[in-house]
Every structure is written in C-alpha cells, then in structure tokens.
Image 1 (cartoon, one colour):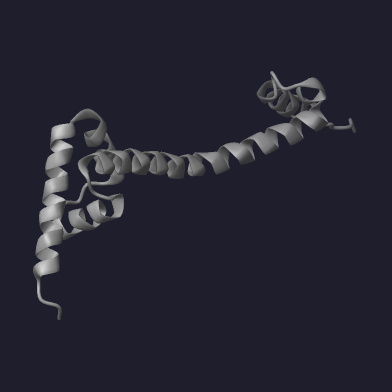
Image 2 (cartoon, one colour):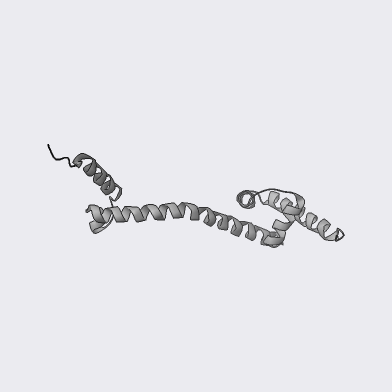
Length: 126
C-alpha cells in the first residue's frame, strides 16, 4: 500500500503561515519554524491590544473632559458627581465629544452639575 504523507494539507498550512509572516525580518519571514512562532506572538499581542485599546480611549476621553472642566472652573470628579446627582447619563465618550465640539453645551452641563451638587449639599443628612 502507498505511503500517505498528507503533503498537500501540510504545504497549504505552511504557506498560509508564511503569508501571514510576510514583511517580518530575517528568518521569521522565510522559515516555517520561526514564522509560526512570530505569527503566534503577533496574534497574542493583537488580541491583548484590542482589549487594551478600549481602556486607552477611555483615558483619552477622561483627559479631554477634565481639561474642559478645568476651563469651566470645576474639577473632573465634582463634575461627574454632579452629573450623577442630576440624573444625566452621558458616558465619557459623549462628554468628550461635547467638550471638544460644543463648548456652550458643555458649560450648560457644568451648570446643571453644579446645581445638582448644591441641592445635594443642602439636602438634610439621613
């Protein structure tokens, strides 16, 4: 009986990995053994950083909102506390967009937050 090597499938698999490794430096783009390792690492970093990117964007939005709050004369944490007290449910992304694109609307949000903080402070303690 003839010996079966599964050669077409193996070659296809190796070509696919080498195609992913195109552009890598040195052996990592030429030899399957090193290319496989480099591609696996690249996929791990890509998976990790897709999640990490979300936190980085949130940090950027917070920085933008904080800068706009300072210009309006209120600290970031007092502003967020005031929004929660006022029942305004905007997320950081929308607050950052408003801060960058529409300063008048952001200032009105700050005023609403201040008013909510004032009523919260004037309320009797339970």
